[in-house]
Length: 443
Image (cartoon, rainbow, N blue to C red; front, side, top):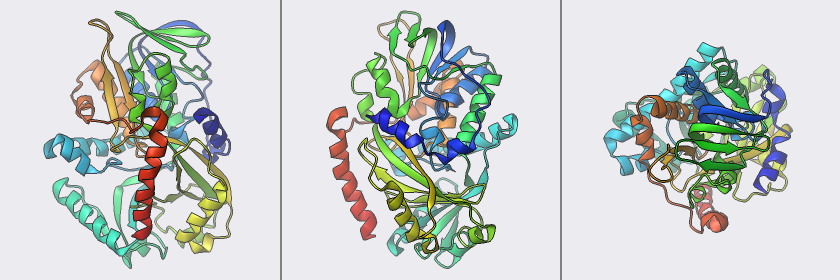
């Protein structure tokens, strides 16, 4: 059901209409040998493929659909530092010193985007500037306190804007204050993902689309990954399929309960028709990306062709909500009343993988028995992964080729399975989300 809904949600993606796939990556045929096999052709898997190929490793990547097809190529396009869980969760688990190290790595993830754009000439419509805004006076005060703490404890200053000063960046009556971060920004995620794919391919990685893994067999010295028409014999394996990893679990790669540490959540996006530049000036004069501080948040940004891209609805089932375009339009009108009657030309969505504590889940699955290599796992970016996925792939490459200490810092984060396991986690989560939604509404 999840895959069927995901395919339906992908059909009307504006990103897919405006990105070109320059290389053909045919399905795997026959047997190939790899030092590292990667399952999943999103930003995390492509980043790992690129970093490993740069280090001279023999890499084969298997993607069940097309490269960048799932959340990596359909998200809101906002590249931000930090983590979805915030730093309190990290401090509680790792202590302040290691929390600072981890925070610095999330900023490195932003720098990595720029380095790759420059080195491989990836045209992905980058625009600097990110704004976090508050929908009530109480939330504005809390946001300001958090910004002051991030400046003093993590040496990450942002510009605080009161309600009057917000007009520098956004012209909306809805918000009471906000923080502007010049290090963040936004881009076209599918163009960026396909740019990473081209870079990895040029560095020597083998990429295969339409090659879902049907079975994984772990032997003493190698791991076999079988597809419908071929197999990869690999020394090391990275699983980076996120919400679609349960299919890999069925193939025998994951220990029981691994999939229950994440939950697929549907998220939805739309774009308006192109606006006149003067009209966009009256909405987002500095062209910054914007998100609010609610638990179920609205997020939006201008596109390179002057559309307004808007996201803000979620679903905790595998079913597409009814009247999706209408509900997104209503949320958009709350932010920009002047756009109430401007239709959304494209509406699409997809699934992100969240963890119970919203912290990313990086781990090494131990080998079967005393011999063999571990399997690396990346999942649980919790809707905050556009930048962090890129760093995650780099950390896996470091762990395989050089030093695992930075990967291991993330791997120390503890994760609990959702109550009810994989079968009953959805109704349990819905009850929890209703409580958070009530807090959003009541301010």
